Structure formats: C-alpha cells, structure tokens
Image (cartoon, rainbow, N blue to C red; front, side, top):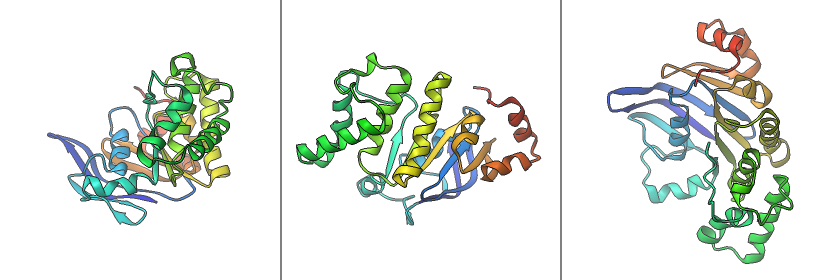
Length: 244
C-alpha cells in the first residue's frame, strides 16, 4: 500500500532521514518506533505527500507520488486517513458535526448518506449518547476515538496514526489500541502508527521499523525484535519507553 524507497530528507543542514526504506502492506499494522525528534512524524508527512524528500521515492498503491502536484495528490490522500497526535477536532462543533464536516464540505454527499456514515462511526467508536457533546466535554481517550471515526468516515484503505496513545491513561490507551487492532479484523484495513512506546508496538503491530539516528536499524516481524543485538534496541526492550 505504502512504500518509501531510499528516502533522504534534510531540514536545512540537519539530516533527518538517511536513505530510509520501509513498506506498509494492506491489511497489516505497521509501527515505526523511535524517540521524539528522529523523524517519525516526518515519515507520515511523506506518506501523505505533505512534504517532499530530497532524494528517494514514495509510492502509494503503486503510484510514485514523489513529484506529484498538489491537485493530483487529493485522490491519493483519500485512500488514507490520518489521526493527529492532538486530534485536530473543531472545538466549537459537536461530535456529529466534527464527523460530518468534511463529508459535507468535500464530497457534498446527500444528507441521509452523511447521517448513515456518522451513525456508523459513532457506533464503531463506542460514542453513542455523545453525538451532541462538544470535544471539550470528553475525555482524552474519547476525543481520540472521535478523531479515529473522522479518519474512517471517508472509507480509506489505510489509517495513519501519530503517537495514538500519547498522554492517555492506561485504560484509555488500551481502548485506543483495541480500536486500532479492530480496524484490521473488522474493517479489513491497514494501519501505520509512529510511537515511542514499545508496549504499544507489541500489543498490536504485525511489523515494526525502528528509526534511530536517521536510519532504519530494524524492519521486520514484531516478535523478532527480541532477536536483535543492536545496542539501542536492547536498551529500549529493557526500558519499555523511549525518552521524550
């Protein structure tokens, strides 16, 4: 579904990604693990075509998006949903309005179809009874579920998550991870998420890539991470959480 081939990216003189290659397959959950500031969120931006690499290629569904113009990227991005770390909800809109906004503005669907899709995501996220609440009245975990519902409402093939459990309590974190896992089981979707929490990776990821000092130092099945003898990987297996 998504592939980075030998991608190098610099911000000024700072080398962020150094010949990074990784792939996210359909109907699998892929994690990108690493400490903050190493370029994990940058990888998501590359996948969406929001930024361009200095060299290398980015493919989505077999199409090279590296040099695509903004107008041509819209149908590509429709194949992917994004859940931002801060959720990016509209504070002045109810939960239902947050879910329906982009359907109404971008797709101009009939109101009955919009209502059907909103109700479907309300049920999937377990938010029945909260349709008319504002985001500020919800817990952090519930706001995250609204953001996931909004990402799903376009019927994408892949969902991208930026630190999905950051700042959440253990109970809310578990609910979010279960919701992500259910995307593959119930919706036949793929997911990619970036995180610094290794327990999240072992909880739901089929495959993991570890990003360290701009390079991928491991990319494979999650359980095989235990077999790595790289000093950084051995240290994070012991510490369970990376330094922020």
